[in-house]
Structures are given as structure tokens and as C-alpha cells.
Length: 122
Image (cartoon, rainbow, N blue to C red):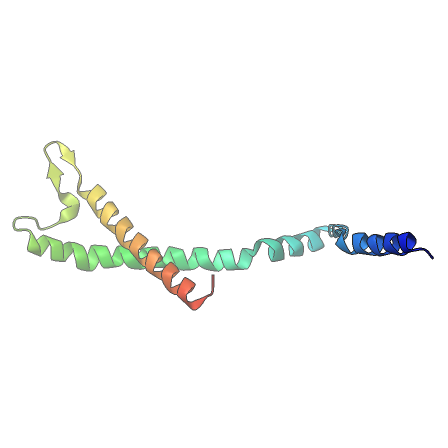
């Protein structure tokens, strides 16, 4: 065998190693497709995160409505309830409560994401 033939054989071996393997065949059957869907998109983790987020939102709403807003009402003279606050013909109190709740939820989620990243779970 000549030097060129040996070199050509080596290049063919390298090429075979560098070629991508064929894509796996999609699963057959509804049940197998469903299992593939569940594992590929991590549906259970998403469901757990959704449920925890739902209850976290309820917890923060209770915190705002039961602790923070009464404290704000005590701190500002003449305002017993922030949710009934009105400015001229506009009742903006409910919007202010929703805004305060959103900011607190965003802060809690931000802190949770920072902690998770620090732990290396992301």
C-alpha cells in the first residue's frame, strides 16, 4: 500500500468519526410520544414551579393585605385603608395595592432566582 492510500484510508476513518450519527427515530405510539414529551420538556418541573408560584403569590398577597397595608394606613394620617384611596374622581387605591403586591412578588422571585443560581441548581 502506498503512502497516499494509507493517508486516504486515515482521512476516511476521520471523516466517519466526525459525521453526525443519524437522528433517533421518533417514538411510535401515543403513550411513547407522551412519555417523550414529558421527559423532553420537563413538564413535571414546570408544573411544580407553577403550583409553587401560585401559592407564593397568595402568600405575598396575604402579606401585603394583612400586614403592610394596615401599617401604611397607620403611618399615613387620615388613611385607614389604602385600597379605598381616591384622587379626585379616580379611585386608584386598588391599583396601588396591586402595584405594591407585584413589586413584592417580583422582589421575592428575584431573591429566589439569585439563591438558586448561587446554589448552582439552575
